[in-house]
Image (cartoon, rainbow, N blue to C red; front, side, top):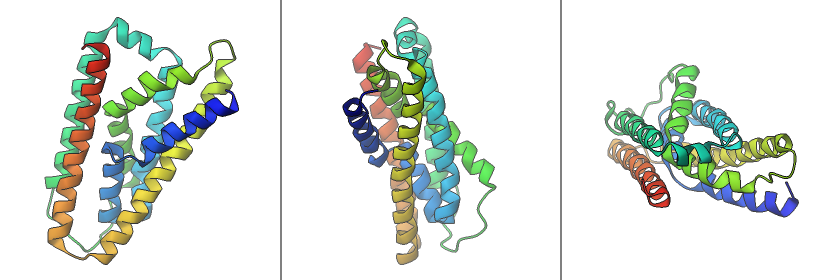
Length: 208
């Protein structure tokens, strides 16, 4: 991967990591509820799922998506359903308690991060549609994939850590149950809207 191609690739995925979406909202709400470090468990899960997306992109998932559009439509609808379920748990899953208690097991938060990102239509847009265009088929694919994995992980973790740190500081500063409740509900809405827009964009791009 040439330097300028990599630089353009980095800017694209850095912008993606800093753009609010389902992944950002999941980590942000976890940070408000449990603190910065527990929120890094779902963030890590999201990054692990990204590695799977990159592997799929390298193996030609974009070609497969065009060949089997009905199967990918079902996948996208299932992804929306999963994100709606997570959004409901985020916005209405329980009483808002401003006193932080022991968070759920880290592996549970990690699995939520993996599940959300695997079902995230935004990931299908970035990894299924955009990432393959940065691979040079005339060069060895393995180094390009490894560079992509390292770059995407660094960009994603940076963006999620920034949001998590901001949410943690916000929670410490604004000890208002009404504020927290509406913040969670708005975050849940943002998760669903972002995923729905991604599905719509892939539908426009493919005609399905």
